[in-house]
Image (cartoon, rainbow, N blue to C red; front, side, top):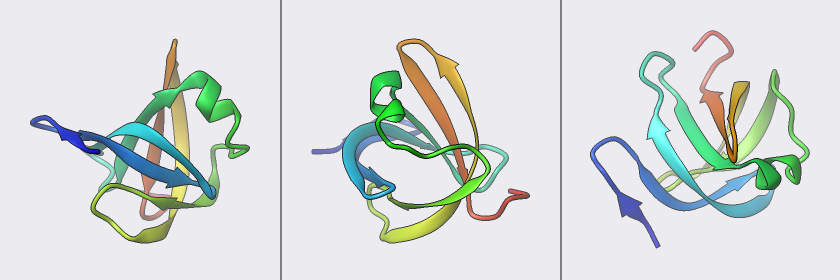
Length: 87
């Protein structure tokens, strides 16, 4: 199931081989994506900033992206995923 609004959508994503639902929106300055998911879901992923991770986002195939950072906004966390480390 996917639910879209003007800037992003909620759908099934895979991060590091784990399937979950998250809100995904285009990164405004990075050329990548911002992904919002629950803090508890993030902690179970076993991924860390500044590494390459395999992801599958809504309407996209699986690809390797650079996990450039994160911002906690309890009870959620925003992940900054980029095509290259510099954006």
